[in-house]
Picture: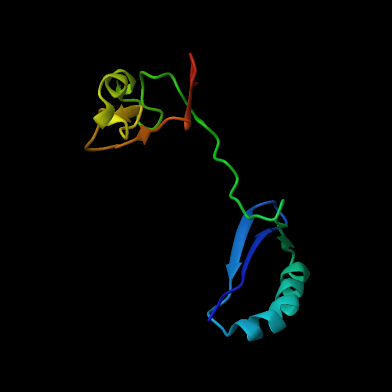
Length: 119
């Protein structure tokens, strides 16, 4: 059993994913072109795979000042110094919100950019 998955854009540029139900692979191969035509006829543009792989686009980096949580504006823990001193903490986020009960925001290396003013 297999499925077809089409990543498309609608007329407004929104990403939409269409997935077929489980079917025999030969049945899917036979119906591929008619499924693709239906999407196009109904205003969807299939997104073509680039360079032979369907890698997701990288997320934009979170912009924060390193002091205030970008989600709830509470204070942040800066875990970077502890991570450098103690290798057992290497999997900790670089920054995490001190409001553990209400927010639980956290960010790991490569996911953020420190800026002076986030407004």
